[in-house]
Every structure is written in C-alpha cells, then in structure tokens.
Amino acid sequence: MAHETPALPYDYSALEPYIDTQTMQLHHDKHHVGYTTNLNAALEKAPQLQKLSAEELLKSLENVPEAIRAAVRNNGGGHVNHAMFWKIMAPKAGGPPTGAIADAIKNTFGDFNAFKEKLNDAGLKQFGSGWTWLVRDHGGKLQVMSTPNQDNPMSQGFYPIMGIDVWEHAYYLKYNNRRGDYLKEWWNVVNWAEINKRFQESQK
Image (tube, rainbow, N blue to C red; front, side, top):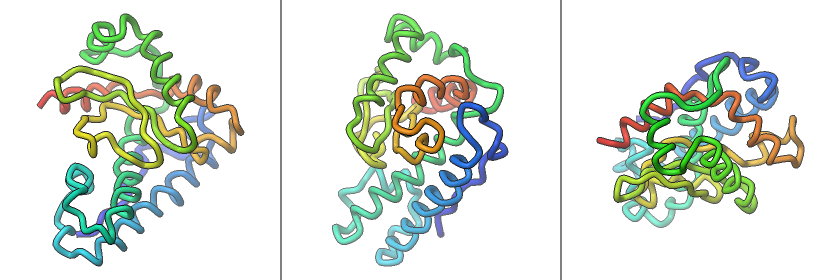
C-alpha cells in the first residue's frame, strides 16, 4: 500500500505571522510530497516491505535491503517527521505546556523555560539540516536530542514526543539565516494537546 502525504490540518496561512504562507505551501506540497513520492519509489524495489508502516521501517532499518536503505531512511524519515510536525503546530496555540506533559517537563528540566532553552539550543547547534527533539528514552525518561537530515529518533530506539524542523526550507523565506529567531517564534504555534497525545502514546 502506497504511503500518502496527509493534508495539512489547517490553512497554509493559519500559522501567520510566525510561519508564513509561502513556506507552508512549499514545505508541505513540495518537500513533504517529495519525501512520500521517493519513499514509494524506493519500496517498488522491495515489495515485501510495502505492507509495513513508515514507522515500522524506521524502527528496523537493518532489515531494509542495503540498496534502498539510505532512500528509506531519508525519505521515510522525512515523511514521518513532517506528518508529526504539522500536527504539533496549530493556529491560536502556543504558551506554556498543559496536562501531563507539563508535569513531566517540570520534573525533568526544572521548568518550561529551561526546557525551551535546551531544545532551542540543540536546534541552534545542529550543524546543517536536521531536527531538535524531545524524546522518551529506553528507560522511560525524557531527554532532548538532535538528529541530522531527516533521521528519526525511532531508528535509535527512542520515542519522539515532539520535534522542530531546523532545515532551512522550514524558515528561510521569513527568517533568512536567523535560525534562532525562528526557534524562538515557533513556540507561538506549539500544539500542546497533540503533544500530550504523543506523550501518552510513548508510555504504552
């Protein structure tokens, strides 16, 4: 079964002024669609893998034939990462965390501002393209990490609760080379309701 790019859960302009309309159009319709298209093309060479979800593929990359492993890692990661990214943003969102994730952040990082600074710093220091993440590790603890390119923490055995895209295509039209400004403004669109859902899923 072919992998499909999910529709955005809001209009292209819904995250203005923090994320501009043109960036959302290009990011979703060109970049994400491109990852999904390339993932499906790679899997044509391995029909036995076509029944697996993209998440299942990323969790067991060692079982993907070497000839297409890089393509599945890059494009499967791009597809899964972005499918999450659209959902953990929302219009009229932002502000401090609520619900169970708020308690978990406080218990792990001390307070929300300390957590935000840690996540932003990891994104700022990620050399080149990549993502900055809040994950649940093997022992059930929360930690901040970053990954290069479209690598997903699932491939390392972590559960990604939230992640911020720090590829230039996510911010360059509006913020140019000011990645730090983009990361700072991104918190105005964070969707804690969705992140709480992912946090609950991570506990299963």
